[in-house]
Figure (tube, rainbow, N blue to C red):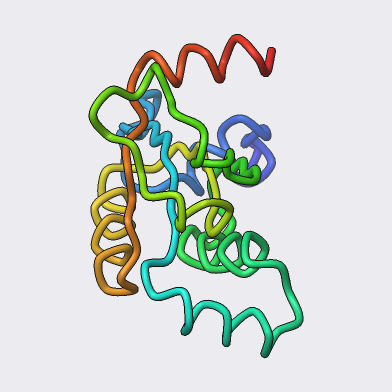
Length: 143
């Protein structure tokens, strides 16, 4: 008679190691599309000088640390906010925020999503959910 270990195939092994979602049930996740940047530019500039990094790289590292590298995270440089955005009516960020942050797409489990938003507040960052029009345009451009 085969032991439990021998009888287990790779699919079963993966199911065992997953977090507490019932077998066969996906863990509920929220897809977050957003822009983040630092409000306090002086502190941020000090951080970048200290680490010899571009601002976006410093921020990317922070975001990756929060997510512990466990989830898909795609980061690109922010667009220049000095140009008006017709697909973002009434929410034009100030020009001095240009290029000081990251755009990200991440699939986060519910608990992590809440912790992520909290962490943004603690570190004095803005997390802006992008309008659906902008998300659609982004997806169309990056297929």
